[in-house]
Length: 451
Ligand code: UD1
Ligand code: MG
Image (cartoon, rainbow, N blue to C red; front, side):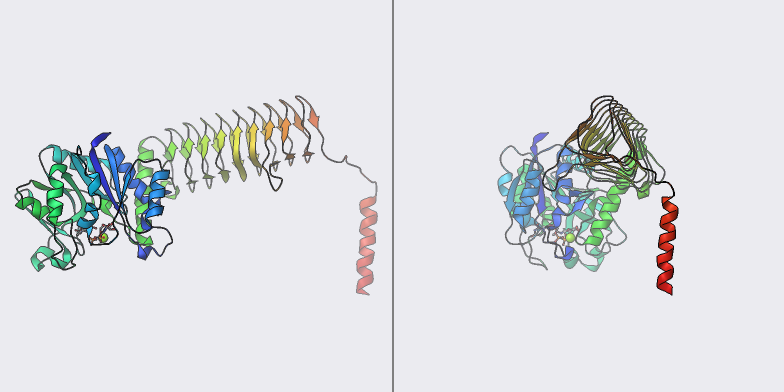
């Protein structure tokens, strides 16, 4: 981490076109607010100081960044007077000791750390200002980069460009890095003398040149520079993020036969040689160990899946679930806040919540922990090697000893000692001939009604 490297994130955007109650930069990509993706990129590229320029719904944006325990300073841009004006709102962050500054955007979340590092490298090689540009067949609306002899001469906004300049296809991404000793001199020289009467950050290029600085443009993939203004763009960004994650995991040795149908969270961790079948959704906080298998149509969040464990098809793991090595959670099984021991099995149609299940235990089909009394949650402890019969209701708080059994269909309200078997149901009685006599009675009633 380099304290001399400051990232300024412009996060004041209103985002009216999102038609949302949430500030634009807090809309999630892979479950993480966009502005936090940008902050993570800044940190991953070595930025030791973070300044966030907020405006609209500033408190919410501050809260989200602070909740993520990121040390950042916040600066308010009260009037929207252009990108140059926005950067100057963070003037206080440009304190002594800062040597490099990069400007990122809270609504441009796909920039990779490698890209920020390439801008830093250009500064290390002598550039004073570095602009990240991209090539596009459809440049309309973007600022055009005017490059001569390897130096960026100027950035021309669409509205100020001549027809000849409009034919340029190398465009401004908006991302700019500065050697910081020059930044204030440059920014303060920007005026609002243009078609939009805004203080354009982009004027920094021309002003820098006039001040004798070295101004460079480097190319970046357009994909990384996509900004989000509406929910269509947000979904496009989500799609690209998911594709990146899938590719990264496939290349790291995770087996996925239909990766396009698997949805990841920003923090999903999957070890090599794990298998993920089609149509699986990962919410935040999931770790899957090597050799584990997540079968089709499963939904996981806040869960750890141990080595060689199997989940699904149609499994649901909720927060606080930990499956030890070789545990099995089968179809239509929901597990919440529970430790499932090594090799334990919950194969069919169960709910196990607020529980611990010992190694090698077997939970029969349809068994349920009754963990909630309408007011409080209670714990169920199931010992190693226990055998919970089909359709057992385990009324918590409850403890089932090691190697104990419960009879199928039992409602178990009292603790069961080790090696004991609990019968929590009425004994069966067979009444001879009863089926036949009842059938005849009922038939007689039916006939009498027809007459
Ligand atoms: C800007 C660039 C343009 C570039 C394009 C890339 C300028 C003058 N132009 O144009 O060269 O091709 O981005 O998408 O920089 N913002 C503030 N406060 C303001 C104004 C803007 O925080 O007063 C923020 C916006 O919320 C947004 C970003 O700066 O995140 C860019 O602003 P926007 O209005 O989208 O600029 P463009 O006209 O798209
Ligand atoms: Mg824009």
